[in-house]
Length: 107
Length: 195
Image (cartoon, rainbow over all chains, first blue to last red; front, side, top):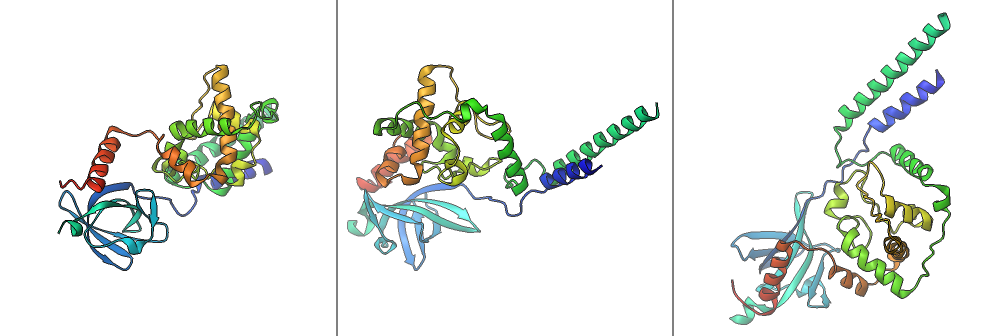
């Protein structure tokens, strides 16, 4: 009888999935030009005409070629390639690559 | 006769109890792969895996000498075959790794690093049933040697350098869509071409 109780408890424990589900979004990529930089978020006008706003955090990497930069390097008019993921209803930027050519420089 | 009846009733009750528990499991979990396994389930599964690995293999030391070459070989292999689920850093924080049940583990941590060389080798060669880990055994000496190189590389994961990560990225499998994006990205960022 005791063994049955143990077996039932084990099965019940297995049936209860852990609380907290790791349901992250998918990684997206976009090319575009920075339309605005405001604190911890950057608005990008993408090459296909859309506008996306991505959030920056301490994990966001900013690079130009092999050079690693910080978020202050992001300027309006910069051409960027951004990798971002929806996390907690926000688009979190994972990586932003800066181009050598900028809209600002062209003007 | 009475004893036989008692045993049959008992066995019937056990079967009913297990069937009920199974039904509860199916209904409660929905067989959802996005869930995290509970602590007890994880512990039982690890224990079962430990029992399943033959002791002769579990106690084997890596027969391939550790060298820069063997680690590099394992690294190249890992980037090409394993990183899609485990990630180049072995953190398991990939789209595939997060969607598996159980999740692809952070291989830099003790749960992986404290496995013996033989256990790691066995897992690479045979995979683990009821998880997303496939077996990679080819039955060839070259295949086994390759798995032992991977064991060296798994030991190296906690101390990967940024330069090594960059070299792995270049070896990660890419879809035609990824390749198209990279070409477009290169042109857009560095050649100043307007779309």
